[in-house]
Length: 326
Ligand code: ADE
Ligand code: ZN
Image (tube, rainbow, N blue to C red; front, side, top):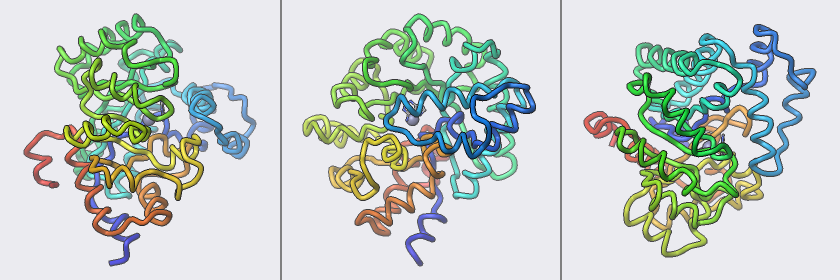
């Protein structure tokens, strides 16, 4: 079969996708209208034209502005359902969704409104397509440890709807150790742990995420190759990297698809996975990430299967179900 068809059709898991980053400009405008929220962009086209990022922060500013239209449980449902339809079309069988409660609770939206809307959409996807989806709550690292602890308190009544904890937002200047105590508490609660590290930040942040936060996966992690000892450790311990190629290019971590270090990461024996990060902002959902990387780099059928297999190995699906996919 044609490689592009293999990439599109192979069953896969998506492990690094911010649900607020799946909000398409059209839906942003529809929700703004529905909720009477005013935007500083006059039209869908004007908003889309603003999607020219120079780094992570320039993206985050627009991403938080986009999320400001989300107010009701139905808004969170509609956003999540739109993503799950796209994921299903891309043959995603399992998805672990990041959500950023602080982006919403800071605006006065109730924590339950956020979780219940997202969760109800995941249940409908399970029922309709057998697509399993679970939620990973992220702390915004530009906010304080105290605010992270307060958010964890808000989450406790919804513990059964959340499988894990992540760490996202502005990386530079907000090293993992800032959240060591709150991550320790989350570990005691039996939550899975992940963190963004080594996207814009140095390899040192990957090491401290492992040693001080005790994370099970690294989100991005592409800068690990600057440190040979760290790379060997990640390979030996089979710590997965949830890599997001189109994101890395849009946020200028790499200039172009052909400059991405995906092949070197795979050659180093790392458990690499391919993910879309914020697909509405970075030019495509998970299959588009696969297609563009395979078009630009010396990757073939064997790599495709390895990446799909890695996505299930690296997932937090329960062991018997995971075995089914491996
Ligand atoms: N929030 C949404 N996408 C992100 C990314 N790629 N890095 C850090 N925080 C994010
Ligand atoms: Zn991310």
